[in-house]
Image (cartoon, rainbow, N blue to C red; front, side, top):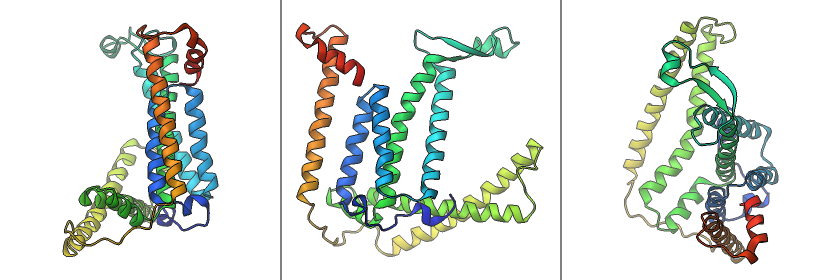
Length: 295
């Protein structure tokens, strides 16, 4: 996880490495729009599996799969835990009580802390949304050259400063993990072993001793980078290398997916209208039943 090469884009001969960066970004935006519009757990799960399948097609290494799984599992756990505890919609089904209302002080203030079944389900759906977007974002980051990404953003009239900072953030993320590995190695050489540390005070103290060196080293690198880009004319109007022509087949693929997403949005609108009693046609009942299951 702390290996810098794991986070940076690597060349490859797969189809996902060869397609144009602009195609990848369009696909990311369209699939992100799809996971926002769709509410069906079945459809969201299929989109999530599709995103994982793309990583398999890209032949992601075992280290990258581990990173992906850690982020996804942490997102699922955080989303489900938070929604299970703080779900406020009705109906709510209590499956466990963590803090009874009769508990002194805290129980009276909170009215009791419960785990709700509907909250777990809602949190799982939200986790599928964020997990799908995260999976696609990491796929683009691992299969695309950052320079091509910046050039594609500039070709779409994206502000140069914002595009440069976005790409710099992607390039700087591996540096942060590398600095973290160096600091943790230094802590271990000084005798720190989290498995043998029983005292919470000692653990918290070591956490602060680890955080501040990471921030200091990262800030020094950021200051060096800022001086470098400023000396090279950051933000000035400099001629850019022309991008190669966008392959016609990939453009048609993006247009086709765009039409599909627009169709999904229209169907979702029809479903919302019939659900609220604003527009309903009895002859469309099979279509309404289908949308209820998949949209």
